[in-house]
Length: 372
Image (cartoon, rainbow, N blue to C red):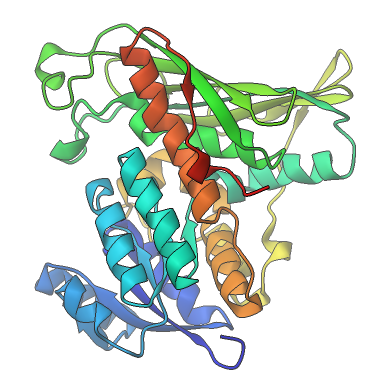
């Protein structure tokens, strides 16, 4: 990988189109191919960005020997199957969240990476957001002292999203709140206990058999005195969109703003102070630094719903691309790699099982944990 640019194929061109110009400008990448079932949309995007190699059939794309890695941005039910197909076809994989929808699918992806020696990275936006990078910098400098507790939430209203979202168990899409509480201390979840609360509209319940409006999960970290709490809601709960995390340290604590676009708060001892979180474009190659504050979906009539609600995902997109490409170039594991991605994803899957069982403790499977 170190001797040539990495040929990238992007699969799914809704949210996925956001990444095309980032790969085009990154010094380690060649934005080689795109894939979309709708040929009209495929050609529209291909013409707009000057990508000549185009596929409407994913299986055909995987036969292309020129492709080194795929970046998957398709509906969540397709993530595991498409990731596995790519790994078995000899391609590295970056995949939008979540990794999969079942524990078994997560297991298969981890095993496929170990069998092939290929790289998998779940493209979790929050752990590369400017807010996370700000708190991480404070923590690594020792300014926060000892971490004592972490809390995160992801609340949104999914009415109007594609039909497969209707009635989705809240914790089945929990990576945006699970990711940061595990990533900051570089921890692994050992076991979880989750409670469901409230009830969604009756017509939403049958698809997944999940009645809860909100699910709240406690996570016990492995080999650590730390635990965390994460909260998730998708329907019938009044709340402005929020992806947040709070970190409580012995010296300083960080609390996410309650209202979008207002300032977050740092507590030094018992003294609170509002803080403007800086951008972290300086961590990136100059060629892609501008993408922390601008992207494809900027004009009022051309914004992807996840980008609008997610406040631009905290400028994370170029950081995600850079981590994936750098890992391939340097021959190292990205963060999160397959096991870490499985640990993050399985927290949500098992949390919902726990909620359905009245808060039963559920242990994370061994394959999601780092080998000692």
